[in-house]
Length: 332
Ligand code: UT7
View (cartoon, rainbow, N blue to C red):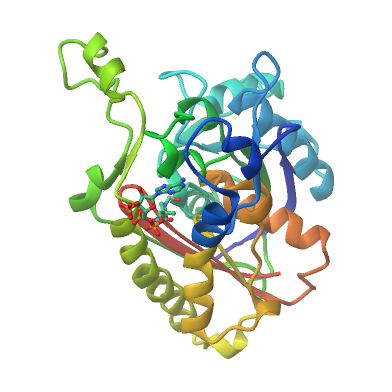
């Protein structure tokens, strides 16, 4: 069987930096509360008319392609993971395909929120292993700042989420000792409503009403404490699942890159798994929670910072809305 290797990584974040201090102009919060509860110091907000999810994905993709030494025309499949597509339909995959001038090749959108990158990797790996596609571009992007209410009502979510994009090139290889060793994906729809953006949905005659706007029902809703409780159980579980599947243990792991949901969640997992600071990479401090983009954005920066060497064992793990969760183990 073929192996799927990540051969290029890139990221793009909007220019505008929004500090915790700035958020205090709009809502009853303090930089100390935000840092203590989430670890976040600043995040990026997109520029209207310049940044779109698909354009940010394309910018990240161009860097990933360059790093992989692959020309855009050699890509034979696009996968785009986002919870904030440019349009309700069509998906952002086709828009990025147009942006990159890749007429004709298929584009799949993945809608698994915080687990979007892991789900996307599993789709890419399955296609590559089957021999159906050879050069896959997986892009992840989010614009969330415009669905946050910068007010007291919206403060529990507004301080957390940010905008950004990242992409990876995944290619076929005969070397099965390296690359994506395995992916593990899960879901439990029982908790679908605990972290959601309900409206405008297709289940009502009137998709948008004045009442919905007034009540703030067009904003996302999160049961933060419940998500937190489930996250700290599912992360270790799915990391161990990946290690056990490959006959490895936590001592074999060189770097864990968890979904950047909340620094407290990552630190909880780190402690439970007995990992030193050198063996976990976080950058939520700078970008907040960028949902599907968070893992590849952290991966891209970890590579730039020299935190990943040839032969290192790297684990990606995610948990979020759905609930969905998953992990991937990569021999770099
Ligand atoms: O990537 C998607 C997955 N999402 C996550 O993994 C998020 C998981 N959950 C969390 O990260 C945390 O639950 C939050 C950061 C969202 C909230 O932290 P918490 O420690 O669970 O706080 P809480 O919701 O229990 O609220 C504690 C207090 C409340 O006040 P009272 O009721 O104790 O008076 C909130 O009203 O903090 C208040 N609060 C705030 N205070 C200042 C909520 N948001 C804010 C805020 N600034 N921004």
